[in-house]
Each structure stands twice: as C-alpha cells, then as structure tokens.
Image 1 (cartoon, each protein chain N blue to C red):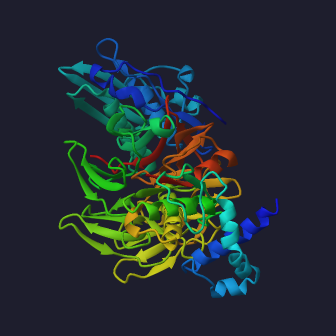
Image 2 (cartoon, chains in turn purple, orange):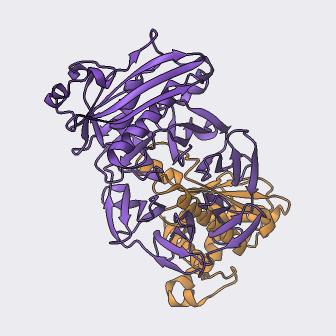
Length: 429
Length: 177
C-alpha cells in the first residue's frame, strides 16, 4: 500500500523563520506490511490552542520508522486523554494493538505533557510519564515521547530525537551555491552551518554529536574542517596537496580517518586529533578511500579498486592487513557499519543502477534495499533501524530513507535545489 | 580525408608512449610490439605539421612562439576511464607547447566525473583523470612546478541531467589558467 503524507507546517516561532528555508518534508513511499497498528489520540489541551499537534508529530515519527501503522484520525472512535477514560474493547474493535493518550498543559515559559502508552489486548499501561520543558519546544517533547513508545514496544532505543546533517546545492555552473545544514531527524528546524560558492561534502558527526567534520573547497582546493556546532568555531585540520576527503571519526572521537593523496595515490590515513599526528594505513597503487570505523574501533572498512573495480575491504588496524569483503557484482562502495557491527550498508551497482544494499557479515549475503537508480551516501541511524541516503527524484537530488530490512521507505524532498550527503547524528542525549 | 587515419595512428602511438612513460624521443617495447604503432610514430612528425592547421594552432615540434593560452581548455573522457582520447591529443599538445614556451605560466588541472557512483570515490577518479593529463604534459616536457591537480569529482557538473549526454559533458578535465 502506498501512502503519501505531507507534514503540515505548524506555527513556527519567529527565530526559526529565517532558518526554516531548507526544511525537508516527508513522503512515505513504502509502508511495511508488518507494521504494528497503533492509535494515537490527539492530546487534550489544558489551555487553548497549541502551536504543535503533539500527537501528530508522534504519529508521523512512528509511521516513518516503518514499524508502526498509526490509525487514521477519522477512524478514532473516541478521544480519551488518559487511561481512565479508555474502553479497551472499542480499540480492539478497530484492530489497534496499542493506544497512546495524553494532555498538554502550558506552564510558565513552556509546557507540561502527561501521556500514557496502553496495551490494548493486555488492557494494561506500559508507560506513563510527565514531561516538563521550559523552552516551549513541543516538537522536541513529542520526539522524546516517540522514542519512549518505540523502545517500550520494540525493545530498541528510539532515534526520533536525533539530527541529520546534509548538503544542498542550488544553481548550476559558476552560480552554484552549496550549503551545509543540520535539521531534526524529521527534516524540520533546519539550520545553516556553512554556505559557499565551492563544493561542500562528506559531513561526519563526532561521536558526542557536538562537532561536524566535513570537506570544503572554499579555499579553491579540498580541505577537511572540524566545526563545533554550539560555538560555530572551526579548525582546518588538513589541506595537503591532492585529495583531502572522506573524514570518519573513530568511535572514541579521538581520531579522524580520511583519504589523502599527498604521497601519490589516494590512501587511508588516521589523524590523531590530540597531537595532530598522521598515520598512513594503506599503501597501494589503487584508489583507497571512504573509510568507516567498525563500532569496536579496531578495524576500518574502506573502498578500494585494487581488484579492478571498487569493492569494500576491511582493514585490521593492529596488523595493517586488509581483506576484501564484498564479492557480489562489480561495484560496491562507501560501506557503513550497523551500530551492532553485524552488517554493512553500502552502495551496490546492480542491473538497475546504484542502490543501497545491506551485507550481513556472518553470511556475506548482500541484499538490495531500495528500488531507486542513483543512490549515494548511506548513513545509518544510531539505533540501526533506518538508513538515510541521497537519491534522485525526477531531476532533483533528494534524501531518502529505508528501514534496515528494506520493508519501509520514505523520502525527504526539498522545496529548492538538490539535497545530498546526509549524515545521521549519534544519539544526542 | 586521408589525414584521419594518420592522425589516429599518431594518437595511438603517442598515448602508448605516454603510457610507457617514455619521452617523445622514440621507440619503446610497446611500440615495437604493436607493429603499426612504431611506423605511425615515424610518420608523426610529418603529420604533426598537418595538425597545425587546426584552430588550437598546435604543432609537434613547437616551432612557433605562441603567448596566447590555447582556446580549447576542456577534454572529455569515456565512462570509467582516465585514458586520453585520441581526438584530444592535439589539445593537450597545444597546452604543453604553451606551458613550455611560457615558463611562468601555471595551470590547475580540474578533474571531474559524472554523477554516477559514490562521491568520494568519484573524487579519486577525478584526480586520476587530471593526473593522467598531468603525466601527458610532463612527458611533453612541461615542468611539474607549472601544473597543479585539483579533483572536483562529481561536485561541479558542467551539465545537469541524467543521461549519457550530460554524463559525457561532465567527465572532463579542465585547464584552468
């Protein structure tokens, strides 16, 4: 079943108005046939109209995950705001496994939300919580509730309160403008981090979520920068002759793997951020690039064409030995580990073009997850449930996301320009 | 019309010479293995003069002093290839001549790819293309200090769109003076 859902634009606080220009919207392109039915009742308001529809934000979050199928609002048989008013039999009649009810009350400078998650068949309360917030950010509170509901039902930590970084490009030829943004995981609250007439690419979040490393050509040649997101201060960490690309943080945040060609060929190097020393990890006449750390920090996966075309290799850092790990097809590139280290997400060229694929490392079986033709830059959610990537829609570059099992997908089109190079943040709290 | 096949064999011979990393002074093992290539090179100086009729004004032996930057500044590549196509050899030679004759001139070789495939891998492929041109210039006697390579990968397309027309325009190396 195909469903399309455009998020409405809620009231936007004044300070956001200028930053909201590159917000992304969500279109669900494929719902999972195994999604769990859930009813999310509009939250009662304890004081007039609210700037955000909290229940709708939660509903959109859960639906986007592909693991939930929220009941349409017009199918809600009643609108209780707490478990006391719930008749479980009614909710069984509309095939809802779970029910979410709640109330929002304005408080000084912010809001208080009380909500409950109810198990319809067990007729029990799984979750009940009071939240208060003094910043007035109802969406943030709603994403927090989505995280809690997701975890209570699936056992997996929710990733709705995370962020994404991405790059936009508008115009063509000499007039092209590039910009680096961060936004909420649902594409809202976008903020420009950097803008340039020269290319920006490969944003990478530090493991603590406080910094972005990226490649910028603003000096006329590629250089790697690290920017502190809170202070906007940044440092240029490499600007060698040749390539300076593909920065990747080690899991402990102390090292940055990257591609440099200063010694001739593109090779993988590791920068020790503390003492600014570089260690060269590969030495090969072929292209070696796109490093990504295993979660345990002891190995890196990278792309190399040493066998003729691009394939993924795993490099054991202690021994320096690299072994090829992809063998399906003649183009496999840009690998990214799942958070549990058991799978790789990558770009695979098959008969239909370049697609996001998953390779499970115990079986080495490669499964294509998308049906698009020009996918790039997969980046995995910190809970491993979804992969965000860049793809084409018509002639525009857009972001897409697909569940790790390929069953559910959505797109995040932008109103203007091409969007690309998504990077999903780590957990931020 | 008889010119074309000669030009082609000249190109083949030259690219073989470049691949072998030898200077333009003569025969290599590759050349002798390819039979016709050796003789193609032999006739090259004669035909090379013929190419001076082209708009780029290039000639093999670089007899005429020319202080103008050659007007053709972009060469194109086949998919997944860093090989200099035969039709662009004369363009490269004209730039080589210009750079040899103008020792203070410097050029940035901008390597580009089409949009297919991953960005950082394309960044490396773009560099490979630009370096292939750099090596050609070096073989032609251009000082390494006059040449810099910067790859833009797929980040600065010359043409938008999905299709071989756009892709072919984007797989290029640009001489940026």
